[in-house]
Amino acid sequence: MLKIYLYVYLNRIQSSRRLEKETQRNVELMWLVERLTPDFKTIADFRRDNGNAIQQVCKRFVLICRELNMFTDAIVAIDGTKFKAVNNIAKNYSRGLIKTCIETTEKDIANYLMELDRADRQSRTEDAEKLKGKLAKLQARLVSEKTIQQELETLPDKQISYTDPDSRRMALKHKGVLVGYNIQAAVDTKHHLILAHYVTNNPSDRHQLVPMS
Image (cartoon, rainbow, N blue to C red; front, side, top):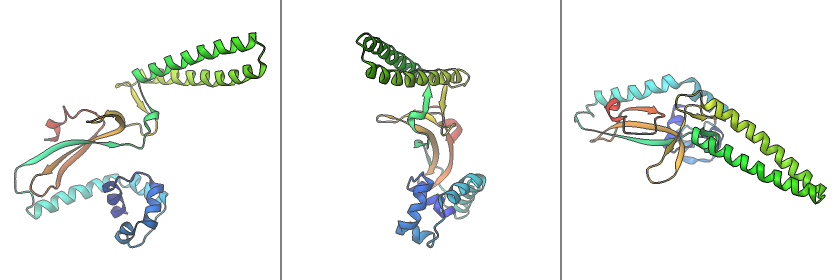
């Protein structure tokens, strides 16, 4: 199970269900785990139940490298990279984003009310019924968005992710954004082995250098 765990993170496979299929079709993975085919729930439970043990494996690896004198140089490189979370970007909200969503929904409701009034004046009964259905959905969406807005005001960083609560919206270096984590790592410059690492949901690398050092 540990081999599977390491393999999927090297190859950025996040879904347990997809990983279950990979153990049955991916020749490389089949060889690695000697044709074992755990189901997605077993894989997910392993990750959930063994977080501390997996961290200890990482620490032990570093100790073994020290025993083999692989960290003799005093030069390390420190950098950060963004890892995508399970949380879809549509399930992440900030104060500014939810304000825009509410304004858009209110504008759509106003437009549908005008259309509904026009349909009533022209006695278009069928059109009026369709508009009422769409209007009801928009009004329900507005209630939901205002609930999210109230919830955001209670949070320190005014941001919320509903699938993966610890993940945060982060800008990528070149373009676009993702909802995920900022992984900080210190790497030995001679053998390119990771000496230390930690995960933060702070999107900026600016304040990570000192604690990482």
